[in-house]
Image 1 (spheres, helix red, strand yellow):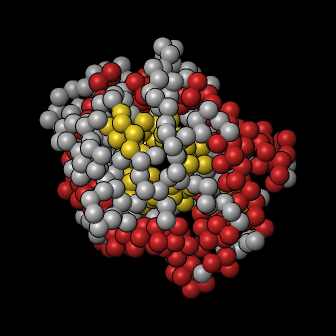
Image 2 (cartoon, rainbow, N blue to C red):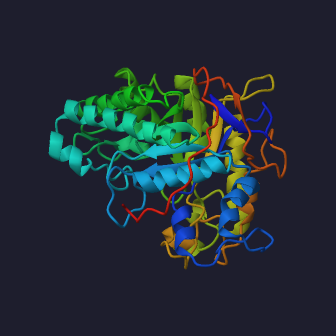
Image 3 (cartoon, one colour):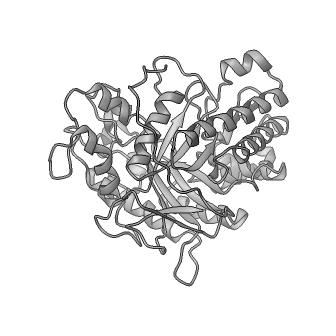
Length: 422
């Protein structure tokens, strides 16, 4: 099941489009004067900022990350993330919840077991899987009970190298080496690590389906959306352990800074995954800088220049690729269903530190919206300027087998801003 805003038609080829803007509420809370501006330079009030971003990009969905028990330096705890999700729901957007299953960031190089789980289970895989399942159910229930329009839940973040290290740890693998070896043998640590990862993924699926948000799409996320060999090396052994079939959508990342594949490689990887598994696919994390090419050692090999126009073209090209993935001969929705930008809200000089000094933002150094934000709206089935209003229609795509989503709920009144990490 995919969701479209009323401004889009049933033929919209990318029903899940948006951004991970997990830090936007923290920025607005900490800034005494509204920091953001429209493309034409008009100042946005704090209450207008989210609505403008949704409308300018015709975004349908916001991705929000959640840590289990973060430190005070990380705001992405349960209370803060529910509040951000309520705000997104009020603005008419669906919410994609990204569960990191860690007290801090989880990515290919770091997948730490939450401290409370480690204390209770040590390294016992069945015990950790039971904890993960119970946590998933309780967490999803908390969002549903808060009136959040939860459309998708990502079970783990960039798990190509495993989950809950060291129990499910696989050694990092280059794209070339994956192509040479192939399959399960490509990763050190197999098969025991794959057994653990599969147990965690199956537990996450059970936890989601046992929750009051069972109709949300389940997403399995790995990072290398530019390398079919790595994708097959990671997913094949998990599929053999019955840990892929239950997912509705396969999500990927693509950051040219970290992933050396070209646009053609992304296109080939997405087509290959669809051919292998027949599932919907989405790029749930993408990013490209609009300035500072001198800081990018490999930028001369990229398909796009590090400029404002290059960033805009990056969006246009990825939207086109995803629109064409698995597209049927007759008009209709294909198997590519979404693209999500990574942290468009971070601007240098704001109270919240900006990754790469804000060069990957969709706002420039004066906090004025960049053309790349508007480029998201240039996709099939979207009315120009139509944005993402609060009226939703459900549209069945060819992949997920979900019968129906619950109707939108009005969230309860928002309380005071929770303390960071609290």
